[in-house]
Length: 469
Image 1: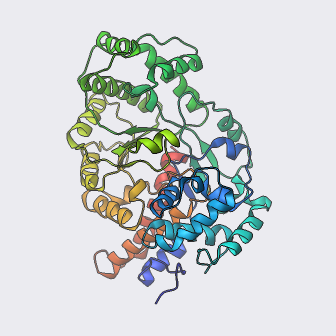
Image 2 (image 1 turned 45 degrees about the horizontal axis):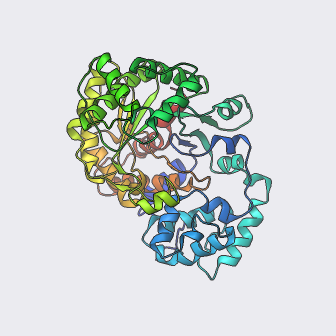
Image 3 (image 1 turned 90 degrees about the vertical axis):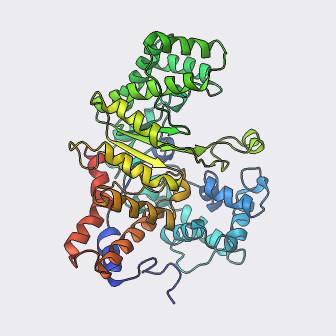
């Protein structure tokens, strides 16, 4: 019986262990998509308690707590940090089988050196005291935690209207130890059917310093802000697509009409929404391509499904789930619109529905053009899929239908400064998969070949895309 989270956790062979310990583990982390607040990195935030740093922004944990029967007051409500922590510790035994059980203990072990501790109500007092004593030390600030995990790159997620002063300030620091770059997320500018769209355009007009009366005005305002992002070090863009639409090509006048209709308060039909959204995305893709930016599509979430939770707590609090809409025809059509003019940028496609993995991989294969290795990526297991089965399934399908060797690897997609052991989780799964291939005779017994594959997927490919593009 192996020890819980021991040195060879998830590693089933000597080859896998050698690949992980000697190759993968020492490599820096390129976390190219997350939701960390740049302001907290710039201010080098410190936390008073484990309950604060662990639970104030982690909707994975919130969702598990609700499932275990914890009242919302001890999740996102007015309970104290200690009460929230105690509630989480109490439900930890019920989380066996959920990746949170592994992640939470890895966070305790890797950040706070509590190896061997099993979190529960019985150990809560000791965990609380020891973690809080660590958090009081200077090296447990926001920057210290990133350095502790050997993070080389942090790609935050930012609205076009966001102030980029924190990113600019971080970019001027020569001794920071890692890079922090904003990622351009223009969802509120192209999702014309959402509540608040008209008010958002007013804000975008103010921030960009130009009026927005036409479709071309909207694009000009977005590209003006995009250039500000590039000046602040932007390497990537991001888009949440609940529904993927190819859209019909419309004239500028027709798009102006859709925009005017929406701003007048009228309800648009599905075709109008699809045509407007796809038109914005196609034109933005051209701008991304010209600026050598990576375009990311996060596809298929059902957002804010529970009305009472949404109205009481808000967005991004654990009320979203996997959607099951078909995407193959529309996704291929949208990418083809971009590719026809030679303006399809480097792209990462993430499907929240794991049954669409093969669709995403084969779609990515359609648009490889020989200019950049792995130009269109089948993105890592995302959200509900960043667990053992999800990661292994995604990498298996990528290796069988594409090229695993050109994969840019893992990301946290997290709001928590304690989430970086998820890269360790990914790296162990990758090394075990490659080790098993060698043990079963499915690849040559060539450790140099295996080392190169692991190094590239864990670090080198992402480095070439996001640090040294």
